[in-house]
Length: 447
Image (cartoon, rainbow, N blue to C red; front, side, top):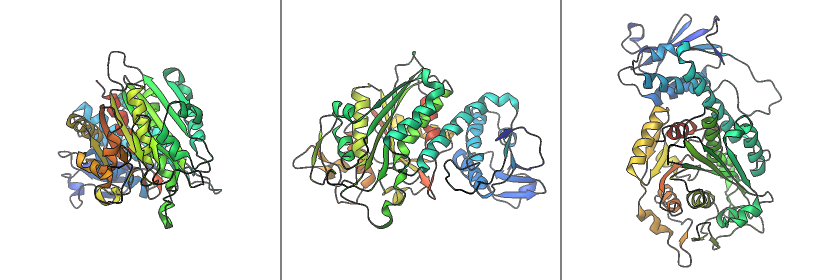
């Protein structure tokens, strides 16, 4: 990526729908005249997620040397917040397909140049966006790595490597299996029971706002490969299960971007890391496990493992690290394909005020979110005769909300936001780094 470089590339510009040059085009369509590609927007009804989405789609289909004129977008608006939000979203959209995050092909990848045109007065906003871009790229690289390369210990090594240049700003803790046992994280250990590779529980604290009493806990699901365990995935359902660590990758990438940009906020990123495999020692249906919180969980389905590792992570964040607000992110339930598909990420919140803030931040970050119901009736399906609750059941109704309600039981009464990115985390089998932008700005907005 280059900035304001003189060249003979075609130039991508924004043009309002009322401009006579695009009278024959609809909003979000493009029209090419000589060396100019005109992208139609509606300046009076700006929809940031859609603008970012369509620009990203254009970039995917047009992998070539192109100038993206960001000035042509922001000059339509007077509000500085809108200008900054546009720069933030457009930088990440334009450059998304600049190169592959992870690639082991022996043939050389085609190289092309993306040049951004932007008034130097916005250099600070551009630099901030570029840091988030790089963090999202790291997240996507981890997502795309196969599990023979990326396993819990290797995940932690790569994260530590990422944080090298900001290590003095953060506190990094990496627990091995023995230390996890000492913390009584029975659910994480149960999921790990079938794997030869040890689990990891990693958290990175970034505290840079001493004037605030807020301290956010971002908890990410980090299943580096999910076979389903004893309830093994059949047919093609095991394919692409390398992406089951997407939540943990997003959390760590977010905390890095916050630290790199020296944002005034207090946040801890937590990665609950293990494989979920089949072996004679695997956890089995009917087993009862004691969680970090002390609550007992009867295993109904070993393929409902994500909620188990997250439950211990949430409990630790709330009761040991004493966070004031919990946000988890996970590729949790396949049922999301029927409700929101790969367009919206599902959001469950314990407080309406948190939803209103999160929805606004996601919109301003150029990401789609949709609120889902967190109702106690969903939890009744998880009643157990011999434990405090089951981890799943064979009733297909409301599966995603049932999982969210299960997780809420381990939050120790803290404000809680749950993100299910099961379908949005990877699209066309490529990691998207979804929610990195939103989680970054949500922490940035911390009061």
